[in-house]
Length: 328
Image (cartoon, rainbow, N blue to C red; front, side, top):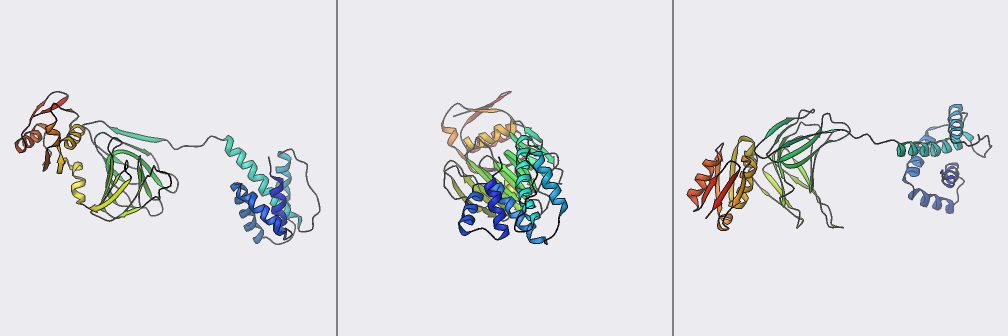
């Protein structure tokens, strides 16, 4: 239904005949109707550009809209140029028609391609804008075949290294389950597995904006800007965000088949080995879970990695067709 009161008050305001009480009433009504408020701004701009006189096209459009709504034509004389009233009514009425059409028209959603790497596999994806993405094992990336609109949006669950083509007019946005990364053109690594408690973003080149997603109501949203060789870590269960220096080349070592452990427990290393080699890791005893290791491996087999780790700490292991068994 058309809000005739808004139309009347808006017309009086534009004619300079509205009282202070009517202006306050109009302000209240517009605050409750954002679409009408937008049309009021549009009309104000339109009005300011026009000169008094005859505008037959506006009259024609007004009568056409009124007829389509089943309303009688209007030829009423008013105390200020009639075409301005016609313009006011036309914009308000046309806005209602457009709103109804939008409500009844299904939204057009750009189709997304999904790349899913199972455990033990990695891939490289070339996007339509020239950006290149290295997708790690046990990771998913959703992206459009062709970017449309003002931003370039992709969706990640897992780990990926991005080399984003520079385009200041169209920011590149990575949507995560617990945050967002926004860039213009740079290279960086993101580790954001849904089943891990921490999201990490480290920068190789350029600058990156990381925005964590807070689940607590009322908590202020932060945006952290990262320079090269800096990392943001967000523990989303505690909603704690920290930044620290890092070695970006080490953070992306996995793209070259290298594994780097810095004071990590065997339990954490097992998660990485399970993803990289596709074998389920089973601890037959508790103690080996807590052994801590620091080391680097380059394109080694699972057998080689386990052999060298077992020389550092005292534990035994067995590799089967589908499992890695670790015991005291």
